[in-house]
Length: 265
Ligand code: FPP
Image (tube, rainbow, N blue to C red; front, side, top):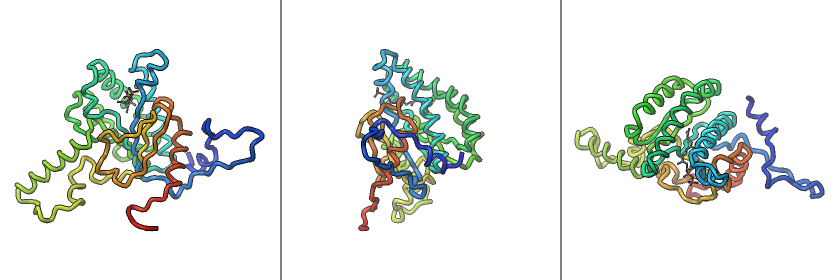
């Protein structure tokens, strides 16, 4: 789809619907020149959403997987370069075994079902995290999907799986120490750029925008290195209710911000 059509057709979110009698208040359109290169999303509230309808938590995760599909497709259409989704944190391993198993099963199913959509939308799938801790079947499906989509160019969809920001920095530090010990790296020459090279996805651009759903306002160990100058938007809706309109609203908030990166404008 031509991205321009999306800018023109964007439907209103409930909070923006202006009553008939009120004076017209135009909703600012998205500026195609200021679409964030890298969006990172903390998909929170699946459990609360399910419980609110009297359902098991896993139904919230299932609906959440559908929202992953719609959000990813819209990001590809908008011209976002990279979308990182916090799908499973290192802390999530401590959830009840049944929920962990259901999430792993859902992930495997999602990867299998989504391949045609990923290909049709030119989306490349990658993953970051302590992937060796994932069940072998999930690792295989991840690898197959990554291989099949490796040449796609519209959007990098990166799933953070078994991911913890402190672990990522600790893993990078270990690798740096090994390089120093092997004599291939001079400690005096270690800079922030060196550390970046040892992260899980060294070539990924810094995160421009972090979105967290379910009204929470925490980063929860998500991409601490990459988000140092990210803009943060908290959305009230739980992840299963996160619509393309909510995404557009978050992007308009992002575009209204003045990003100075510690300098003066
Ligand atoms: C947080 O909500 C969500 C998760 C820990 C899992 C996210 C998983 C999905 C969106 C679906 C599967 C993902 C893919 C990529 C197919 P929560 O369960 O902590 O919600 P709560 O805070 O309301 O309990």
